[in-house]
Amino acid sequence: MKKLIITSAILVSALCAGRAQSYETTVEMSKTGYQNAVAIDLPYKADEIEKALEKRFSAGGLKGKSASKGFTEYKNVKFMEFGSETMTIYTKVDKNKQNKNAAKVYILVSLQDGQFCTSGTDDQIIKNVQKFENRLEPYVELHVTTILLDKNVEDLKKAEKELRNLQDDAVSLQKDKEKILKKIEENTEKTQNKQKEVEMKQQIVTETQLNKSKQEAGLPK
Image (cartoon, rainbow, N blue to C red; front, side):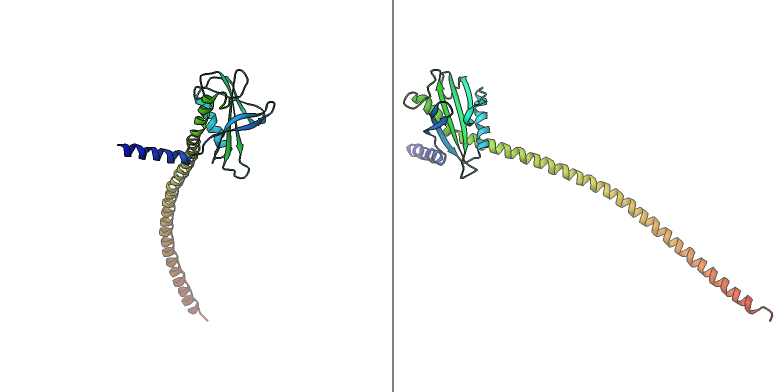
């Protein structure tokens, strides 16, 4: 049993190690200069992360608005994943200039006193934000997969529609083929009948010419 627990712990640690980990840093805000933030680097496009982040906050009943310097502001809200206090949350996703498929996520929290949280002043909130960011990647993955699934479903619907059109065309062409084959059959029969008529008339002409020749030969000289 002890071996099983240790093995499970190692597996969990390995999985966690494979994920990006959040860290404290600072980021520039327009009016207040550099402020303390929690950041994480994720291997996804900035717009994919932004959408997933927006969904995460939306699930908590939050709706943000655009602020300066590319930040999104959630003003005077309660977000239980961070803490029970009323707070203002700022988020920003910066594109990686060297890799378009990577971006950095910043989350800043300020309480009603206007001060931004740090591990020195609000350790539990910072830990909660770090935990939130450390768990963000699977939500981005889900968002990307959902977008891919939606695209694949649309591609499938398009292909199915094209298939139905081709099948309808096949039915229509088969009907046209049957009509053409019937016309060919009718034309063949008419051709054969006309050929017999021509041969008969040719024989009549030949016999008439012979008769004429005989008549001309029998004329008195």
